[in-house]
Length: 446
Image 1 (spheres, rainbow, N blue to C red):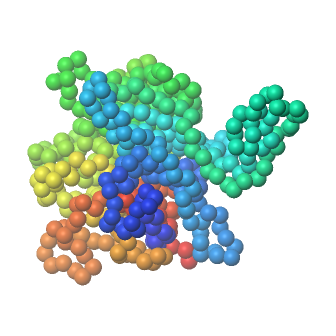
Image 2 (image 1 turned 180 degrees about the vertical axis):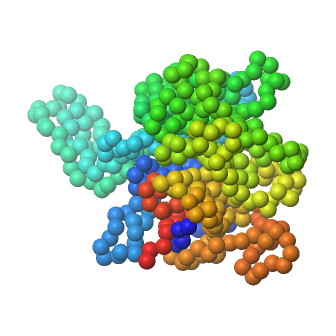
Image 3 (image 1 turned 120 degrees about the vertical axis):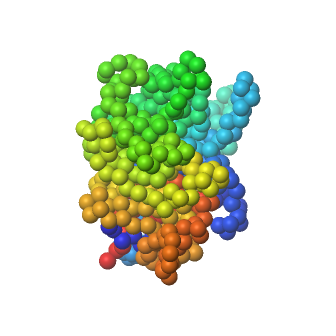
């Protein structure tokens, strides 16, 4: 298991607010975190509809210890609050997901979505401006053609570097229910968006229509027994995707088999142990996140208490199960009363698929090494860690005598939760969102 040191905490705040972690609004809470394909950029979205992009600095020969720290590169308002007058429904501006497209030129492209609308954004740099127009003066006002006696050739003049974010496509009016997932296909020409009951396939060049590939809505809504909770394309095969459900099942679909993928190719489900059956069984078995491994061989799922790894060739049970916070099993009743049992935790792979990371409560996050079977609990907290200090493993005491370095399960703060995490695609650098704070950690530098 890698020993992670504290790299740099970024405090995610809108401009002109008091620099105190306790002074934040609901709009400041980070709702998604995502590295781009090279790891040079890191994007976060928040409940206020804003996207902040961080860029990694180049390594400095004079300051070797500054191993490419991340600084703010661009900030823009991605979504605004809207109101559906036909349904008398308010549409939140909260950013549910961000997905990067591979870089093809000097500009960067990313998809961001709220509950109803997906947008394609272009983030680009500009360090020159055109001057010497014939039909405009220097302030941009149109000139009288009668006053133009000579023709000039416009020239580009250097200017201070400016980073611009412009919306290139808006994909709207295709989802009746709230979008919970977006995933870019490996052909980089299409992507899919999933809501509670349907999954749509989009072409990046076509905004006014999408193709419905999954529809689980029953003719009678009273017969509804499960909803779609997450969906993702295979990293290599453009025809294959998976989606998870609130019943704890995963369906693998092949778009070559039929246009409408209501009939799955593979069905992954673990038989329930009758001895563990309780009132909360169905709630805690609901899958909140599903991720293909980088190799495409495995699927990782996160439910309320565990992370499971499935082999695509074995449908009847997972090959690995990791207990994230099993000590909460006795607290399910109180977690149900305060609605925490419905929290949706995400999970991520490291670049080599050998380590898994996911969040927990009290600003704890967990790492599981698949090779050594070791695990560790770490805490993202400004109070408990100084810059460049090594993060100390944390332990939760369930009962009996508590050691000095342990924390009692009754002392956990359930308002502090890590739902969103990201792992650099090739290095041991992780990003952890804790309420309105973004922490970035890296493995220890010898």
